[in-house]
Image (cartoon, rainbow, N blue to C red; front, side, top):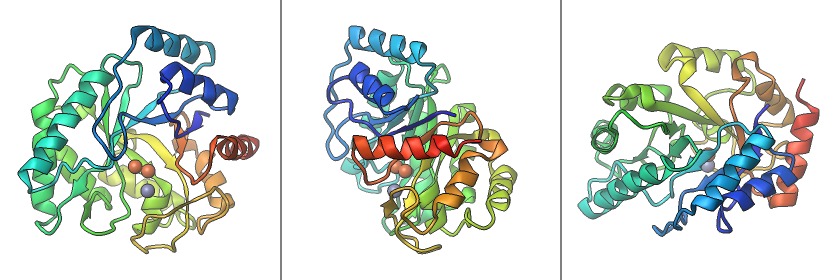
Length: 275
Ligand code: FE
Ligand code: FE
Ligand code: ZN
């Protein structure tokens, strides 16, 4: 099982990988730059080399890069849109120089212009960026559907992917808190939800899982993460997810409200319950 949590790379990639190892993890997620701002640290070849060494030594799974929350690829406001385009391009360019081959982002908010409009805006940026030669896979995150978020149904994600020229470079990151809030009953009907994913997107598009419990009830369209076993989803359902035969070899990343020690405990609990 590939399991890890969100870790800061403010002290470098190799340092984050060491932290992951100390937590019993064999993958991690990081923000490509400050989640609220635009600044990205310079890449250091020595740091990347050390990261690769640690990943090899400890048989890491794929790492997940997360775009900053401030990006809105669906925006109708030109300055917001141009900023998103610029950061998206720069992130992918930088990730091509690292062994982090999964890049996850929140598809976007249409802010009143409608899902169809937003979908086209998102696809335009992706199509304007990808050359088809990237080794980075672009992941759309499943959203909870709060506000005017796009991507809270599998159909909406499929509609974005269908507009992408190099759609083979596109995948999905399923956030357990978000899908549950969006009305996919992964607690009582996990098989059905995965079947629906397969029918609409194809299960092979599922490249990563954000493993979070939820503070908010089923179908609430709210996005509040809870510590594993302390939310509405509950430990039993989470254990069924990590042991599901269709989800082996997919990296599980915790985004629960916890510190490094807390995440290490969650990882320990999950590993104990991995059959
Ligand atoms: Fe996210
Ligand atoms: Fe998430
Ligand atoms: Zn969330």
